[in-house]
Image (cartoon, rainbow, N blue to C red; front, side, top):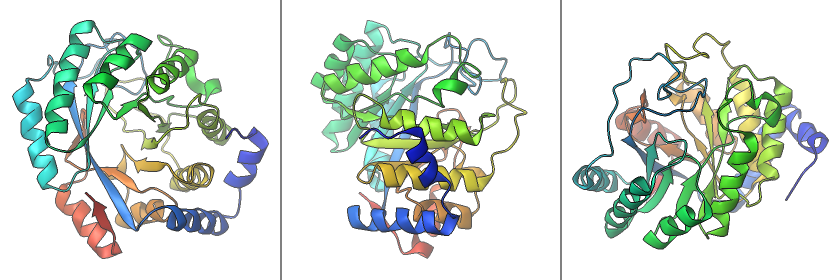
Length: 309
C-alpha cells in the first residue's frame, strides 16, 4: 500500500517510545517471538563495473579486495550443510555483477538446486535482471531475489551513477512478475538526511511488488571507498527507520543486516524491539566482518528469543 511522504514523516517523527511501542505491538501480532537466521555467501567477489560509493567490490574503488570467480558447487553444498546444522533458514548468494551473464545464471541455477536439496530457502543478488533471467531462476527453484534501492531517489545519484534508480525498480518488477519473492531494502548512514530516510521508506511503499523481506543495512566504512569518511549515523535514526518500516510493512521480515558489528547488545535489542526480526548469521557478510555465531546465540538466549529454523 502506497503512502504519502507526509504520512510516513508523521510516523517517523513520533516520540521514540510511542513509535517503538506501536511497532512492537504490530510485530507481536504478526510474528512469533523469533529471529529468522540467514546465511550469506559471496559466490563471485569483486570486479564489478559499478561505482557504488559504499562498495569494496567496485572496479572504480581502490580497496584491498581479492577477486574470485564463481565458487564451485561443492563449496556451496559445504556451506549449506553447515548453515542448516546452525539453524539457518535461508542461504543467500551474492555475486558482484552489474547484470549477470548467461553463464552466471546457469551456475546460480545449479547452486539453487543444491541448496533446495537440503531443504533450505534460497535468495540471490546478482544485479540487474531481465524478465527471462528472472524466470530462469524461478524455474530453478529460487525463492527470493534481492535487489536493494539503497537510498532515497533524491540522494541516490550522490552514491551511484552507473545504474539509475529506475533500473533498480525495473529489476524488482521483473522479479515480481516471474513469481519470485522480493527482497529489497537499503543502507543508512551514507550522508543522507532524515528527509532522505523518509523518502527511502516511501520508495519501498511505492515498489511494484510488496517486498517479503526488507534488509536494513548500516554503512560499513571501507578504506578506499568514497564513503569511508562519512559522518556516523545516529543510532536513533536506525531505530526510527526500522520501526517505521515495521509499521508500514506489518507482515514483512525486516532484516538487521550489515553494520551489526558496530551495535552493542542493547542497541541490537532495541532494533529487534522496534521491528527487526531477521539477521545474517555467520562471521562474514560478502566482504565485511559480522558478529560471531556464538555472540548472536548468546544474545538471543539473553532475550529469550528463538531462532526460526
